[in-house]
Length: 329
Image 1 (cartoon, rainbow, N blue to C red):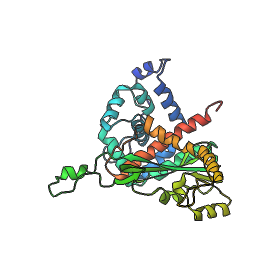
Image 2: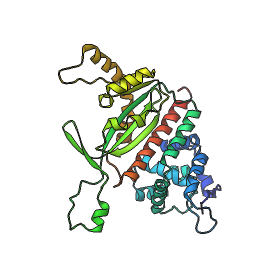
Image 3: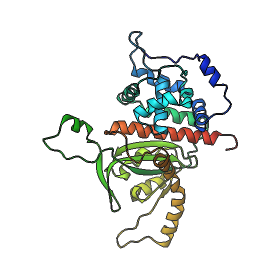
Image 4: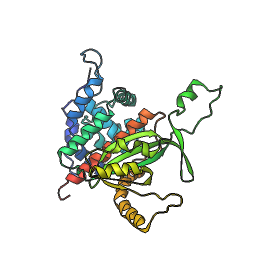
């Protein structure tokens, strides 16, 4: 049975809501709450549950979705999220729960995440947010900026031997992989995005193991309705350049020098101009790592880390949407 939100507030909530001074977090969460059409997301997720009036009701779907927003926006572990829900009035207001309500155990959010993964709903939730942004005429479709970032695994690569216990095997990250960037070695994952030039809304995202080459994900990050493509030299090849130009799409992927064929002065100048446009795609990654703590993944398998990355993209898009629709923006 799917739980429903209780719209009534207690006398204590009414007294606390008369406060005129609110925290900055409270103001931001209020904007997010009013910006998103939660009903559409709730309808998307209803199929995860069996249609029945029997059994104990689950947490309301919108409540669970908002919990994931809070968890990843404030970089909280499951137990830390539970504690924050108990302590922080701004979180309680965002979730629409009364001050004297019982806070659910953190394992219920863990189970909700697994339901989302098993139901393959990440793409639909991400696309639903994009549709809401598009309805506000935020997406410009001038061009797509493509890039990827490496994220360290939650565990170091373990040694496989016959003495492994079941617990050690369960804690080993078998989905992460090795790669090398410059002279530095990495073990982990790679997040790929295609952002809308001008608005910096993330329109496409992919999450893979670290060994996947950037160019192999290029086509999945192109929306198909843009008028230009910008990316660094790792994404370029001559066949794509000819195809783009034939289709009337500006090819803004940086030129790459080859052995015995260094870049000309014109190519270097063009690369500098293209880089000035392309660099905007690095801002979401800087936000993820510096503000949301995504320098290291939280989980030990690809699917759960993909959910985390998807919600980071959703949070970024919602905040960009709020900024772009603000009065005077």
